[in-house]
Length: 565
Image 1 (spheres, rainbow, N blue to C red):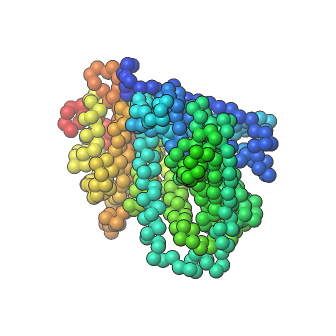
Image 2: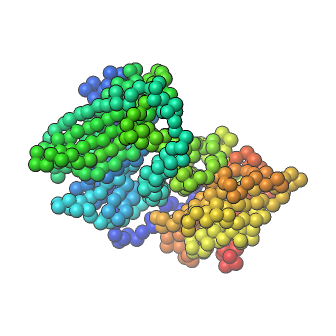
Image 3: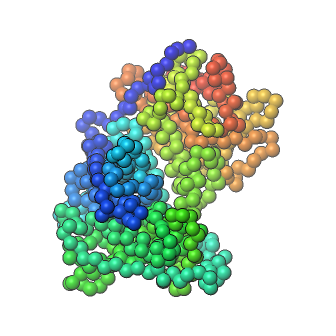
């Protein structure tokens, strides 16, 4: 038994050489601080959501330009959820950085917190991910250099950025899938044609002239300014329909198509698309015209949800035209996406039904869940407790939150990281080192990096053996291997009478090479997040010498160092 300090394993190893091309994440960081005055707030004394979005866009733009060294414009913004209102007198702190660059676009993350200057209390206000592109002096897109993560937290963000990008590309298809599956069931009764309030009654139109104050140093209108105008129009539309106090809750699906320049005439249109009890969705679009060309150009679209402050139920919408019916139907798809995302992200939900529609969100949640736990910065020493291990080379930690227990094991193995990765991925050989597993097989190959896996445990007692239906996602990114497994419900793996179906949250391996080690060595972090059913069998007597999970990792280390796997 050894006395272990928390996380004695090697510090984060940069996956790049000192002279590698690119720029480190920390070099793109920007921090802004704003003081809220009464001109920025609504009748309730809370800052307009549009003003917050304009600040976020400006902060993100500075990170993007700091990274590329060129003028950058907003291409899109992911979903934005407002968590806590910001009031007059608060200081607002915005922090941004580039998380990952792709060919010609980059993801910039922005976090906003508010500080009550009288008592020092700090609250999370909101956060969002922006997509920016950089352009040359002629407006042509530039190919971007790579971003180089410089710590574990930035490595996690780097990995997750690719998953979020896939979700962005699939969003429209998912909405259409929901609409198509529901279209045959729509009826006049469901759309409240006779009972609801005409959708057109909420229609709002704003016209603005783009002035130099609204633009950046290249004469292009700030994306945040466009979002602020759209929020104002949407708020008016929501209030016209609800006729009660409402507040902005979320912003979805913002896409920029064409930039606006100084002198452009901007037209913002907003209209309620659908209501859900005390929530209503407003669709808005921004168009432009010029003196030289009076033809209308579609520049930007967004969907925002508002909720009644007192929980008052809002009258339903009655769509009349073909476009209103289309927007009414698509609102259901966007709402379903929000609910699925919320369900998947909840730690209390161990198993979620696997469907084609929610596949990307489940994969994203799987990768994110493991890397968040693996990130040392999220560990609170008071919450994590080390426990003695019969194997001196394995560092062991335990944390319990509600009905979830997380076990974290760390070990250094004298072998290349590729060997460790291949050994962990090989399900046919899993039983050679894992003392718990009887059989493991791939049930469905989603693609080369994601699989549905069925695993059965050996019978350790007189009770039924346990089995698991898992989504396995594997990634090689930012110089490390990530293998994450989380429980799902899948038609191809129904419950088996002879087994008790157990569940895990995102669990698996983080594998990376230890730099400058002789011989070549690998740092392996094994994380298991278990529900109550699987806990006793996998962990066993946590303070004793018979913990199956420790024995399994010890076996893996020995076999790899002997070259037997």
